[in-house]
Length: 184
Length: 280
Image 1 (cartoon, chains in turn green, blue):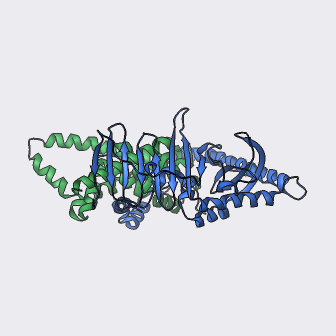
Image 2 (image 1 turned 60 degrees about the horizontal axis):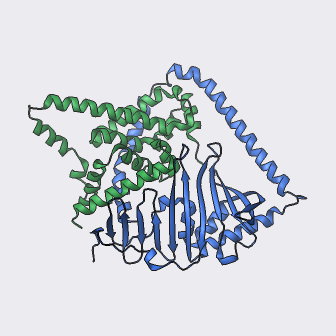
Image 3 (image 1 turned 90 degrees about the vertical axis):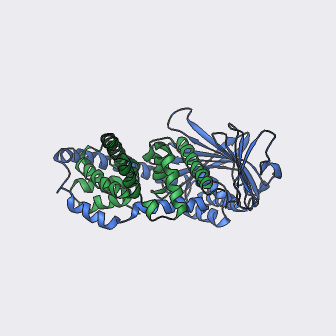
């Protein structure tokens, strides 16, 4: 049986790095996805995720309920993603009027889905961007945690019924968008 | 798995790239231990954690003790017989030809609950009514999503079945093959049962544990025989969250004739139809 998050947190607090490594294995993908929402750049999101885990490690002792590590680290990631979005908006404001078109194009070039992914997957990625934050978080937490509704809804911080509603709406919106793009 | 499901899963693969390298990188960057402020509190937290574990263990032992008293040698109730009766009722799940049920998932706050109603006929025709009013139907020819708010009917290619994540594991039992129900019984641990009156019927409430959750099934002596009704209702509780109710499934009918127009949606005058089928 897999060791609980709470037990791993307590071992990590004692300085067992490997225990923190296991928490990283469980939540790094989710944290990268949340950071990606803030940056729209995969490499940058992966770097930010490392920062999130460093912050989490430093603050482990502040975690009131060790078994709630997942929702807690997701909360840190959301804050980091928000900070990143705010700073990017500031930067964009500075760049306006000074070759802003080039800046936008260069950011566009960095998008993984446009460089490597098949067209259909690119449409899914575009659809993801059109979802609101809550819908996206519901999808992230569901698909990046073994499609376990209970775990996912805790990370999303909503009731089970609200979670079902969000998930259903998000999937429907993606499906409709992809079909629209494919001209079906 | 639908095509969209595969696409979404493929989309999420990107977040696993370079995982091992980044993991190594992170572990090398970690300070020797989390901050001292954390450490000073950690001991107390650990004590609290240990205390909680001891309490949980004590509760578990009481549960086992209770079960032994109720069903052990010399007890009035025959635990093995009760278990066998429940297992027989469950075996019916994989054999029903049609079913009409409701699944309610309570929210964290009072009044914040949602219900999905489902009609299903073997091998794969269904109608689902979602909490937001959306109606979904599916059969071998097409899949329909009707949104009453916008009076729009979306017609899609047939998919493999209903939205399983909305049905929870319990609802999924009916739409899966009998093998799933058999595994369900194997993975469940029988705890206890008691006499109850359910909708003016003398029934038994059978309590089992499976995967860290408690399940209360309402069956009667003839559940497994009469019209193939496996059970009347099941309540699923979390053992981790002080026994919070997670879902409530009520079986309303089994093996009845479900009319064809229930399992497909025909547009009414004024309904906006969006047909996304590849072959119309």
